[in-house]
Length: 534
Image (tube, rainbow, N blue to C red; front, side, top):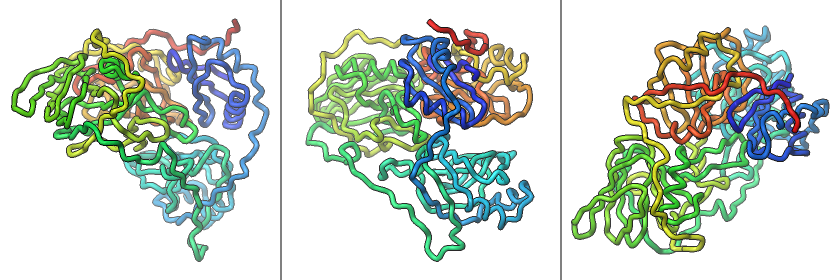
């Protein structure tokens, strides 16, 4: 095993192959180490998030290093059949790459019994192993910007089915009508780790096989009609506002990352200002411009990016209010947020909270996975809860945790080097910290896309097997221009991560506006983690 640093709370265990990865994952599942919070298995790595106040990375490595990796994972008795129309754009290319005929490719694919090794990349995307070795083909040289949902594809030793429209570089050999991800199904992901999978050729069937899936409606899923009370009618929302909370945890087995508010300090402060529990869902507003009318008495707060707040009452009188302070509203008051001169995201909370239906245990809206409540747009009507249980007095001493960055300013972010710093030349490593990067308009909640004058130089063009990625990861595609992953990033990725922004700077990263500049400041030198007991 190699133990590689990811961040102050995450490490990556590199193993010989997938069998060892799954054996270690199973061992830690059955006999857990106190302090481990989450694990993401991948092709030959296991990413582990831990509590540093419970154990150090070196102690965790020591607790893992002696685990038995010889055990084989018992196969599941669950078999999923996937009907496929073998009409993929890359089917002929796969035949050429393998030296087989198209008919042989289809025959070998349908005669294979696959196993779901792990899930990642997107919710419901299962990495399937156990197929015919003759079908192992490389990813496409040039990834597609959009692969349709239901595409059946091959890459390396894996087969898979794209659950939604998304970019990707796998070789497409067919399509299936089945939904890989369906929130009305329990569980939503059709592929679960350990399930066996068999593909069938619809051209040879008189009737397409359809997988039955149990549909359940739980209290969480049911859209209950909230009681009458104060409503908030949205009058303007230049960019859709999103419900967010502290994140969606415990769903990595289905390929779902945590998401959550990008500036968690500001999010918690908004709730404290109005006397809510800090985890209560609130609205994340990007760049301001949001406006709404209240139907009755309410108490609101706005934190994060300092949008100017203007209130106009039913009689037409107008006044301004401050951020990080409780604001009392009456029936007919119209609240308008100006555009934020600094920062990127503001948090709007109401005393008592807003009625919202959680999805998979969280009210966070994951924009990449398309999981969570619907975005809040013009015409949306939200309801303030009348229940006061659990509320405390409003807080009058909240303040921003840092100065919000403005356009053209340089923001310095501390970086933990690794886990793949050794994939880059000395020149590439020096470039990371020696230049500033411009934040481009392609940035969003998934990640900050940045541009530097000099690309980060890699040692070679080797392909990295997919592995877990953490929030704050600085992933470097072939272009050499990094992407800084934020809360809605994919759970796994196939490009090397040169370093990861320290957790204490993630809130700041979530507030960097387009056209600001980023300076990365490494605070560690890359080195493998050496197991130490005690």
